[in-house]
Image 1 (tube, rainbow, N blue to C red):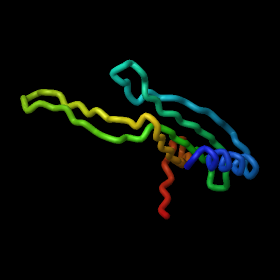
Image 2 (cartoon, rainbow, N blue to C red):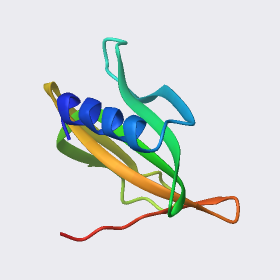
Image 3 (cartoon, one colour):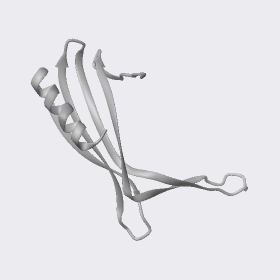
Length: 111
């Protein structure tokens, strides 16, 4: 899901159902050694459809290019996982939720 397709989806949703709520938020994923923060951005829209209230989330974050597990073989030691993020590649995800008795249930779809 790239930005153009997301904007097209928002436009079609607005025309067909109307958007009840639209928001965005940024979450900190990690912090680099030089102090810069790696952020994840969520864009959220909610609307009423014949299925009920639906929420769509577009999540954009840097691609994980490596994972490093730090541990010690001593009893009671901590395990830490460090992720390496790509400086220029961004991945986009789309998640859909349906409101059921006040709770958001993720809609799974198989192609």
